[in-house]
Length: 211
Image (cartoon, rainbow, N blue to C red; front, side, top):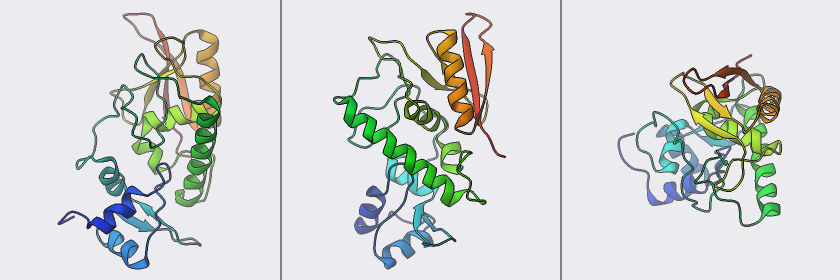
């Protein structure tokens, strides 16, 4: 990209669906974003436009591709964010409101799978999830009813790993860890249970399934 998006184009990018990246704008704006490599037009009807990974980075305020997901949750910006768990994770102000947000985000993610997987499959992760591993795995867990760890309550934690396309998932006990594995497997991930050699802590190593 040779120059920054115009103010009008930036408004279109900022207004994109936070999970699917679906765009709304004039045809001229959408075409210009496609030319810049910040959006693509889906080949199947209704031929909606979606952010590319470069477009998502512009929306998230990161000019360079991130090397890893942050291990701790970012401060709230009013935009939906999956709860990855940890001491800094705050409880939502409204449990009912959060439940609606999570359900909407999960349905949006399934739609993104349908629109972007070559065969239209919704039973395995899509490219966006492979580029946002921690958030994608955390959304799958929260959408299934698992609770993230907070300063006052136990729960799951999702963290980056040195392994490409893999996240580590921790849970307060063996039963919870097994339940997380079942959820991720149903969501199209491949989880395996391992033990940290130094601490003896059991955890899941989960990767998005490709076939």
